[in-house]
Image (tube, rainbow, N blue to C red; front, top):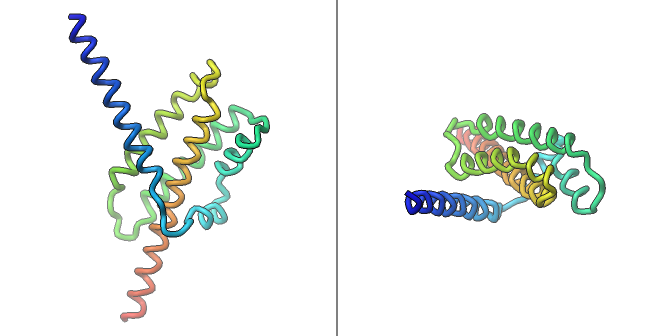
Length: 154
């Protein structure tokens, strides 16, 4: 009985480690153009200000940080799902990063209560949001290019 519980715990830990490694690899993806800058100008997202204030060690309100991260996430999630003119489903990488974002956001109150790497978690959440902003920008850029090409061909 003890051995089966131990195997279950180790297997779960390895699975979670694997998921985190896959998400970290996805976040290291380089985009051909910094699309997130255009998205930030249009949408006025809050995560860059939050990331910069944490980097400069400025005091950050915990509740406003959570609210800003949630709002930015829902905005970018909506745009990711609806910005593709071909209406293709989200890529597995994007779905996995959305799940990873939700888990990190869900664990943030525990990190805040016990003062365990709260700032690092907010920076990680900001990196995920930047990845989503780049993905939205890339999708919109490709869509506008395709529309321009179809307009030239007709």
